[in-house]
Image (cartoon, rainbow, N blue to C red):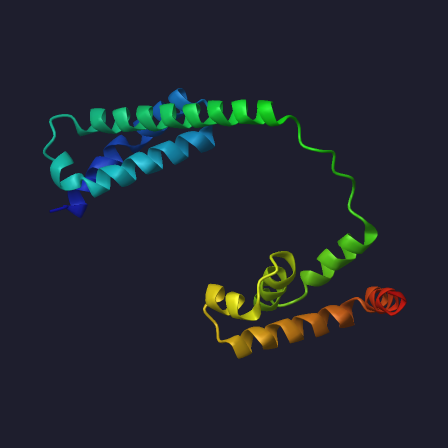
Amino acid sequence: MRDAQSFDDFYRSTARRMARYGYAVAGDHGEAQDLVQEAYTRAWRHWGRLAAHPAPEAWLRLVVSRLATDRWRRLRSLRGALRLAGPPPEVGPPTEDSVLLLQALRQVPANHRQALALHYLFDMSVEEIAREVGAPVGTVKSWLSRGRSRLAALLPDLASVELEANDVA
């Protein structure tokens, strides 16, 4: 059984040292925070047994070290894969239309924006979107309709260009 008070005491007495140790091992403050947080999470999960361990802080240091080693291995593998894949293709600056669209999307409610993105960027059906977001199909249809209407109102020049392009085709 876990004793929250004894874990809190352990945390308070070791957290600073562990943060410094994590930084020494990882060489990066953000990475050190992640490593130490994960180590304390694991310590809490096993606190019933770890509280009786003769050196729980040493166990925690070992966990931080192993987590750091695992991350270094993953990064090394990722670097090798990136080296094989080569540099990413050049990406040009955004077009004026994409900047205007992004500004307009920021003015659309989040649930409408999510439905639009899933529908148009991921080619998801209304039913698939409803399942993913946990909403009724009718609600998703309403979000898509209202989102398109809001975008059309915010982007009248782009909407007319789109209509003209469709008329020509």
